[in-house]
View 1 (tube, rainbow, N blue to C red):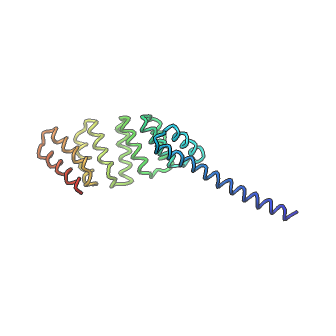
View 2: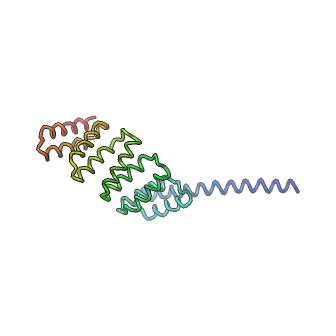
View 3: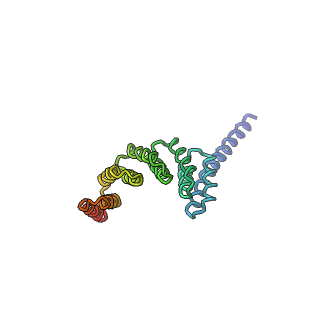
Length: 195
């Protein structure tokens, strides 16, 4: 009788382990299917698959990231912001999540929130190649040209290959009638393109 109970217990453990492994694979499967749907621009299917993945594993960074991207690309900025915030609450050091949240804020014209997130990006990654450029872009949209110039200059310091920061500087200087500075900035863009 004791041997039979041990056999039943061992079989139960094996079957239970197999079920756990299959559930784990199934959870990952939803993320994989979501990624496939996303690659083929079938967003409705991707959203469904990613939502299922999150239902099984609320810490699925891929599912949260791609859901946010789909919502952002579809212009549903509120849902995108919500998903990026969920992702950041789980992974506060995720530089890309902060950067993408900033981009979403910028698209929604929540400029100060975008700048705040970009500052978070630079705290985590002081050499981030695009954060300063984006801050300059936002300040330019806001009409704060001196702040835009400072941010663009910092962008070219951090990332000398950031040709669009040089271009934007050139256009600002041209608009201000500062032709020598504009030429210098445009030459910087040309040099950055060669690097």
